[in-house]
Length: 213
View 1 (cartoon, rainbow, N blue to C red):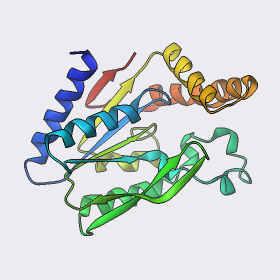
View 2 (view 1 turned 45 degrees about the horizontal axis):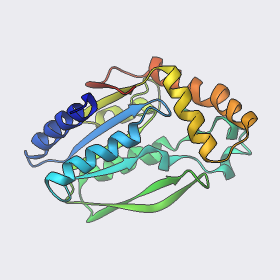
View 3 (view 1 turned 30 degrees about the horizontal axis):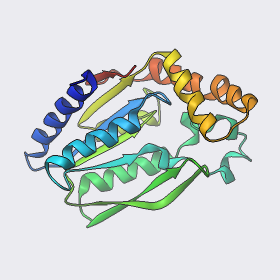
View 4 (view 1 turned 60 degrees about the vertical axis):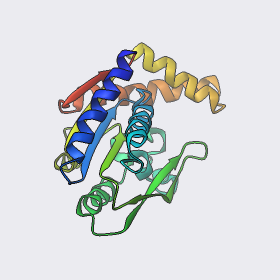
């Protein structure tokens, strides 16, 4: 069993135990771009749902990206993915709805990286699901308005990855999406890696740290 598998199993145990008390558990999984937080969230949800169908659902923060129709005229398109390019209020109110459990289901957006658009209502989270895994770069950022999210989380996890590993992973991501070498360098040096350092240096300490790479 790998260290990552052991850590995922331990987190699953903890979340399952908390959910067994009868309330809804909302966990934040944060990390730099390319850190593997989305993969971790999916694996953790798979582990939990393998134990009991409908035990966990994933809420991706990327669904709250502002659209290019706003980012381009605002001059923010080159920084897409930075903190100021997200609808933090929209995410906050979604978390309030999920916490309240007053609706049969809550529709949440999911970001489609291939076309750089967030698809509204792409995922439905039923009232009965007790564990919500929220994953995203800025969930633990220690500045306004992101710090408003902190009380929403019952458990926090930071995925840490060395910068050289992030660089390699992100380069691979952009190569697979067909970007030119110049576009890749611009993405890495002007946005992705600076954002990664921002996550590393500007986030509050998490309850749990997973070192991935």
